[in-house]
Length: 252
Image (tube, rainbow, N blue to C red; front, side, top):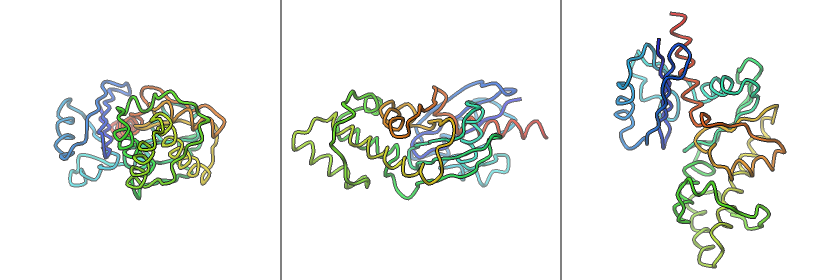
């Protein structure tokens, strides 16, 4: 029996197929201006018994009775608890929103905070700032910097922050120092959200930005503990959705 979890983000669609509880296949593609078409192409790749959608665009499937939906919060809780059984706190910095989640021993959501009012402090914010500084998104997260450099960004609004970065470039400030200031600003926002819940036990860094090592390093310095992550972390939402679908299959 095969279940498909599909995480429809604002920038990328991530899909994960489970066959009898084992990961069969992973796929990641840009959401583009036709997300439904992209999703339909993914769905048609492998015949499945159950499909569960999550993420920013999960309601695209609201009209289809054969496709269930679950919230990103629930999907990430399930996915992270399965990937990292000792997980208690989850940080997910996605393309359009940032989430921090506390879960209990069984993986149930205890409390969460979510920023979804604008792109400030999200993956899209990082992407725009990387473009302004002439980095690829992958390079941006690997910049070698002096973490004690005092330069800071005063605005988290993407428009104003971009103007501030351009002004810094005009003053001759090295771009790696500006990159650090941008990452520090995002870190500050994440820490403020964590303080509204609690930093319990092992902390998992999941979602699209979990491969950004500079961001990971800065958050670790602020909370005083290592973040847990692995190559499957960006697929945690899709994994959680697929697990949810696998359980539905078993109980049918």
